Image (cartoon, rainbow, N blue to C red; front, top):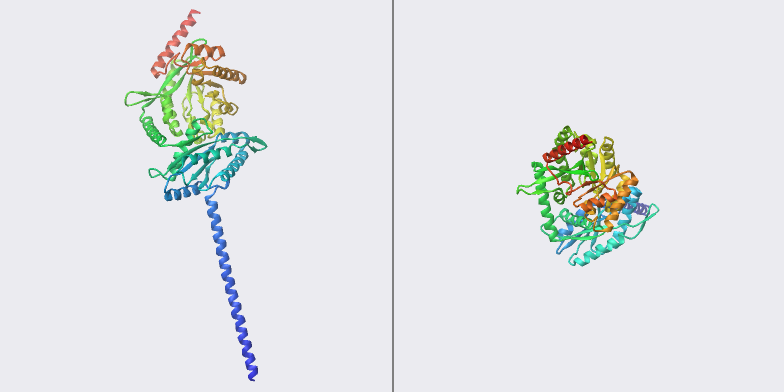
Length: 484
């Protein structure tokens, strides 16, 4: 019995050990499962953080991720850092000519090239569109920063194949050094963007550095633009009118509506001066809106007096437009209450690049109602000339720059001749602005351009002076008719 009891006790003990081991294994399994679940959750969280901070198109940091990284860099900086703002020159022409698929492919290639070329201590991100930003943690040596930018532009400039076509693009870069004066990520990116615009204005495919002088100039321009906006709202910016003539007959055939700023010191700023102050497209849109509001009753009164047959008022659409302006009816609202058949609308390439399709639709509609559409700066080269294929046009215009050099530079004469011939081939009219000398007028007439505007014929004038001029020409026309 004792042996049996001992055996039974041993079995019970062994069973207890087995049960404990099973429970221990179950507990360890649960622990392992919890650890695995926590690791899975942590990994998923990391993936979500990565997705939230990175651009799906290029794999670079997105706007939020870049801003966060730049905030950390600025707060930890013990010396200067650099921010490069870079975009692809004429990126929209790639989208327009090859399609958005080609544009996306180009962005992906640019992302890979930027990643491949960046040295240690640099971070790259894509803000959106074709806008890229590179942060250099150590900018003690500006020459090193510029060298990085040069390597980037060389790499981006290498040929690539898009949709079966071999293309080459270029990039412009603006560089800002900080931190200075409590710079924030937004402000230092803005300074780099300002330098980028200087690179664009300088001809593209360039690198510009935002210096202290540029900072001071930017502050001055911001102050001027605020002053301009206040003056626009106060009614100190008023319309003037510059007559336009058929130089072959001397007939008055139109007048351009111009903006003039009557300053408190008694001086008058012309449209060119105001354009240098108006960096914001919305300021230009506001300027055009206010000028046309004031010009509307003048146009109606002159129409009631009796304008020469075919007389048109030439209106410069804003040199830069927000894409919103083409979509929300803002452009059309400028001409509300004016007979479209009395209007010639001058359009610049930069005004339509934000929304070429929308701009073309608006201009087509206005043209259908009787307005004429004229492309300005058509002699600048391929970019502006490409608009001839895209926009509904009636006329191209020889700008002041080419007219100025018409009699002194054979190349400019050849450009104007080509523009006149192009207009003829396309069935378009051609006109010239800035005609100031008899020799310029003669040269234009010899090339077949008869519609002239400039100081040789008449300077910009008030509405009352234009009214007097219209009446004098009306009397002259009657006299000429009676003599016949």
